[in-house]
Length: 349
Image (cartoon, rainbow, N blue to C red; front, side, top):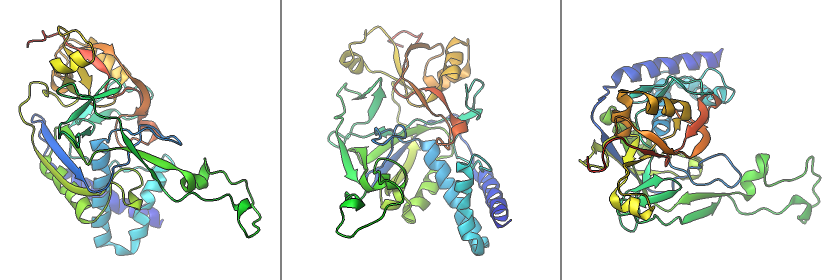
């Protein structure tokens, strides 16, 4: 009963927050997210996770959840602990409150096995090379800047805790109720490492309410709330988050598609006559095929930067396409960011 009451208050705050947004459905904004501590993002859940790229919609939904918890706690502090139970309920696959995200929604008609019929108009986080300051784009399985220079795939590995000896080898006799296994279950964190890209800044492209994007992230920064994995251990602390209108760039005409430069195509040994486009977000494969086979679909030009794109090479993955990305109902077979399309327009257009 108490949990139900807490959820009711959270849902009310979520509805009020959503009314505050003023979504700009046309302008492309660029968010620059600078970090104090490394951002832990894994491409998929695994014992040795491969570093992935952050999802802005997921970050903002968590920020909206935190905002609503703060607002509800101010009104009903006696339920402060119960508000957090919302996450546990969601992990059980029920009663998830779809906290509002200050981004333009994109309707999804063919989500495959996914249950959500919308996604958000935003790219994944694009790393900034700490040596050159250049934005790096996922292209296939590579990371290339606009000059075709490959981003050094150097990663740091951080042990979450010091390595622990098997209790059987301790000086004091310990009787175990189960075999100690550092590779799974509750013991995994005792002997696990997280890997992250060596960068302290990511850039995102989005359409939405830039003022509320900055405001939600600003509250996270001021309260010392980290983003990404292992934030409770101090990772993912925000230094600065600022949104502005994206600078005019012939290669950045859309939010989910990036037009490769001549130098990037040369680095990949792709024909200069091919108008190649790299995806900047996970898109359900069924929906992407629908977009690419449809004539005059507004999503093509608006989101991908070409009015009649075709599939060139996709990187398939079973992953989330809308937040919360870890919710099973929001996962399906997607064309992962870095997948390649080719456009119908001439390469000079």
